[in-house]
Length: 420
Ligand code: ADP
Ligand code: MG
Image (cartoon, rainbow, N blue to C red; front, top):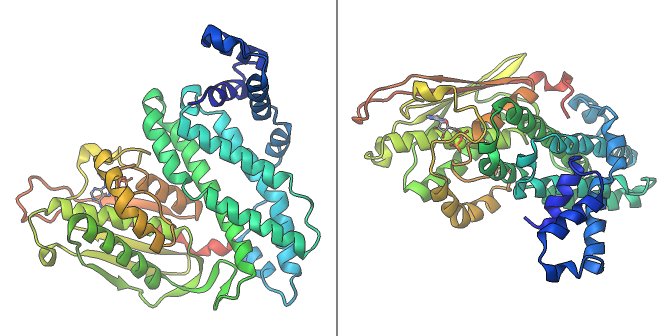
């Protein structure tokens, strides 16, 4: 980590009250030769960087405001209109709302335990939030469609900058969580940061989509989403991923209410479904390593749809989850995978596959231990939950087909919930 990053985080956390103390630190940690530079331009630049990092009254002010939540039905109705006034109104709403949401997240980063907040990857995400806050907060008041266009370009760039945040946080916490005793604290921070990011992305993407004319869509809301199509898309993706990694993949079968359609936002499912399917496919293949593709027990997906929610059950015969691991698998960063192996694969295999899959999901086949906890946080954010039932088996003689059922309940009454 560079000196500036570290010292600025020290200051922002209130460990040091002024840049002078940071300079003193620089003094003591520098070689005599470098001391000669303490008043030159390098030092001035460092001071500026440090000051801009902790002197953040705009962030403090925004963080003191509550965020104004919308229901999807509100944005669905405000997303209709023959003129472009609804697009202008949407941009003006975002201009008020986004800085507040981002400021709340920055407060979250500041309250992380010191040693965790100093992790270079976590610090760089923290800095990205600060930069995004200023870009959005300093944007001139949106008055006409020309301003709206410029604002939309800014949103596009920010969406792009933040695309890898889940993987970056996964990496950062992997490196630093050994310094933290309190699992609850990590869970609260990550649940909040990840779901808030999801909400911000939904809002920004919805706004951008308002000016596109996509059949049966209002912004990002698919007014007649066919759950079967979304599941099939991700089943294909994970099948190809597994065939590249293991040379084989189990069949994925679909049953239940396969014709159900309802209004929904696909974005969160684009994270949850591939993560759960990767887990089921990995368990199936690794627990039956000796079996050829055609003999692998298939993964069975059942869709159930009703007035209150929709449920997706993913049943695999991948040996189940051992009793002693059941309480751990929902922890962020818990994985039974060998990370180094996965990261090697990620660079060649996953990089190219992800491009073709809209870069909506992140991370390799497994290894970060983020799939389950993040999926559960998203499901709860959407008014549902995620349950795991495991039928554990003993031994691995190949004839056994002990199973894991992952049930994701998601409220289809999303329309009345304040989530975005
Ligand atoms: P990762 O896949 O990166 O390991 P996850 O959060 O997706 O992280 O899963 C955590 C752990 O839970 C996995 O490493 C695995 O041990 C266990 N697990 C998850 N799903 C299944 C499943 N369907 N069958 C058996 N074990 C599973
Ligand atoms: Mg996983």
